[in-house]
Length: 248
Length: 158
Ligand SMILES: Cc1cc2nc3c(=O)[nH]c(=O)nc-3n(C[C@H](O)[C@H](O)[C@H](O)COP(=O)(O)O)c2cc1C
Image (cartoon, rainbow over all chains, first blue to last red; front, side, top):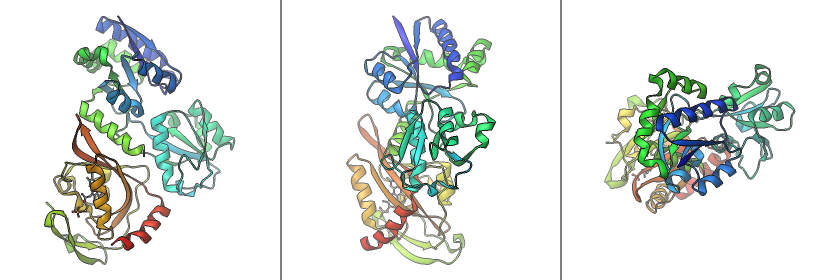
């Protein structure tokens, strides 16, 4: 049978070829057919998960609870040294110096990325801002979030820190960071679904060994990772509990 | 273990009170009016066993509490108990998590140096294979307006 791999739709576009290279590498290593399916929205991905069409997923932490507790997924590995962090930024000309200077009715630009949006909303709470008293502008990409701030179409933006860092110097100069999260334990995880759980140890061994040969290292480079590290079940459960506390 | 607070650890002027903690424990608390602001962008995280004994703390917890990690691990979570928070708040916390539910509230915590810091705390039971194996609390920065409301409300619940 052919298995199906998918990647959380918030992947960095630059790494799209990297996921295809990874899939080719993985098929060869595992001796199984694997089809890489990239969904262009979280909703489309959820529908595939609910229909049990997914066997391997590089999952957004926001979806981890559903994957583990409802769909029988188990964690494999995460990227070494990368955690998902969020930034709240405003136009450099904005009078706001602190999140507390923002008021209800603030126009907030964000993307669909669920974990980043959650972290961003937590950082807006000190100003008594909630999803019910902000004017949320959803954008397809972080560049579009930045553009809304530059054009004065939004008052504050929620960014994935990595995506903010990748904005051009020209754009960044016209923005001002109010707060940068330092959470450290919220991160995407590669997970395995029920049809492949019997090969979990084998998969994990293959993934952890990647940096030790040239080909594996090359595949990692194309994904922007230096190594993959093990995620124990309890670490996954802890991340799920943590997301759960933030989701209220 | 939980010890009395020591005058040499305290920064600035302080008041004294004997706190009655759960299980008949008495603790001499020394507390000042020095507030430490909540660190922007951080979460303060701890986990306890089913009895409320601390089993894990993150770096922000260590920094904000003023204790070392070694002093915190195996201590009852009431090591942070501030005399200004009504016992009813903690009773509600425990009643809620024992039912297997999530608790959320605003808490003033006591530092080792006698100062304090306000947090918005969410406590959830850690459920593994259907059993509660411990509890995790994640704190975030509270809004000033919510803190002001609590400063007015809590004395009326004492
Ligand atoms: C996960 C968890 C986190 C807690 N965090 C705090 C805290 O930050 N500050 C605090 O005073 N009590 C906290 N408590 C409540 C204490 O266990 C305790 O009930 C409280 O300090 C009052 O002390 P007493 O129950 O001994 O009277 C926490 C409890 C749990 C289960």
